[in-house]
Image 1 (cartoon, helix red, strand yellow):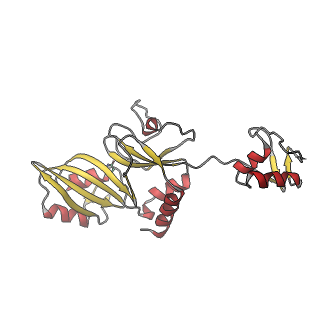
Image 2 (cartoon, rainbow, N blue to C red):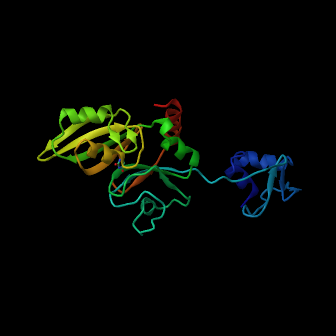
Length: 240
Ligand code: URA
C-alpha cells in the first residue's frame, strides 16, 4: 500500500496532505526517513511514524440497523448451531456483534456494531435508552393490567420501572399492546406480560430510541448515518 494512502486511511491527513508530510521529512518507515513519493509499505509489518509517533489504521467502525426475523439468535455463534443474526449480514468484513439482544423468537430492530464503547452506551441500564415493542398477548387485557404494566410489576429480579403501555388492537382472545420501556432485562416484556396474567404470543421491537424499522424489510439491514450514531451517543449521555 502507498505510504500516503496508509496515512490517509489512518486518519492522519488527506492523501494530498500526506504526500506533503512525506516530502517534508516528517514520516519514518521502520526508523528511516522516507522522502520518496509513491513509496510502498506493508501495513501488516512495517512501522510507520509521524513526528516520532506510531501511526495505526484503526478498524473501521460499523453501525448497522437490522430488522431481525424470528428464528435467529442474537449472538455471533450458537453452540446449538442455530442461525445467528450475523448470518443475515453480508459484505461486512469487520467483526460485528449484536448491541444488546432480542430473543430467538422476537423480531424487529436490533443494532449491530464493532464499537464496544457504543455498545456499552446503548445497553447499560444507566443510560436509559427507550425501546418500543408491539406484543400480541393472550386474552383481553383490562385497564387494571395496563395500569400495573405502566406503574411497574414485580418480577423475580425486582420491580420494573414505569413504562408506557396502551392497546393497539383487540381481536378474539388476544390483544396487541404497545410498550415502551427503558430497561433491558432478560425477557423483560415476556415476563411483564406474564406477571399480569397475559402470556406473550409474539413480540416485535419497533423502535430503539428515535430509530425505527422504516425502509428496512424483515431480514434486511442498513448502515446508520454518522448523524444517527452521534445523536444516539448524545441521548445516552443526556439520560433520556
Ligand atoms: N423482552 C422480551 O421478552 N424479549 C425480547 O426479545 C426483548 C424484550
